[in-house]
Image (cartoon, rainbow, N blue to C red; front, top):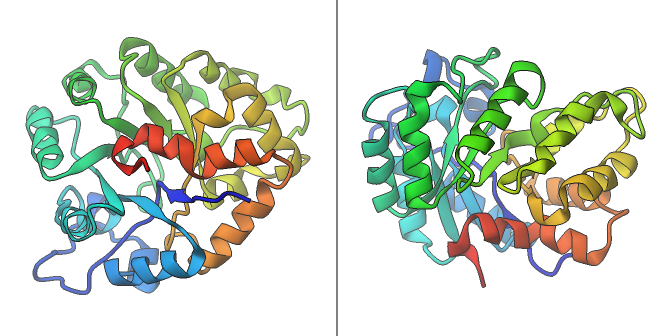
Length: 286
């Protein structure tokens, strides 16, 4: 089992709605952030109990829109344990200025919230020419960029186009990109998805929600996880809890994730549970 665990996808929500107003992207707050949210202090306690050492806290767009203040304050409170992943509207002309602002506040990653629990269909194309200034800024700042664009159809082409145009940007595909793997081994239906491995700047985020929504039909974790590692490499896959958006305690999520990765070697698990994350967010290195 891994000696170190780094989580690249937890969320936090404050009880203080005056200091941190609820202004969700799309106007609708996510159900998880209303029903089972956790504060910074609760996240710290949950990580301690579950044995999670560090985290890149992902700003909750479905709670705070593009106001990243709560994560900024969390990182400031625990600078050796956390870094932050901010969000901006990359379609706006001032996106690079906003990115530099949040970066100056100690945030070392960005997430493009293109779709999700409150926005079912993608509302932007990440490879649109109007978004190039934001990608150029990410390249300049050296920050990793996560996106929840699906790794199928138009989304897959957008991801590949962006990876090719901005080779210096480490692009993280949230929730594995939910590839079509219902056919089971050798997963021929996902052959186009696997071509993402041709880009050295492409990384996969392995989350419980992504894995659970992907494992259908003849697909199993015991066959899919080794396939992903064989194609992409363990050094291009990083674990994220999606806690508390995913149900269960942090301990439950960690235990389920370890079980899902049981067929891998200790070295492969160490990359997925920590070392890849430390490449994506160097501030979290030992």
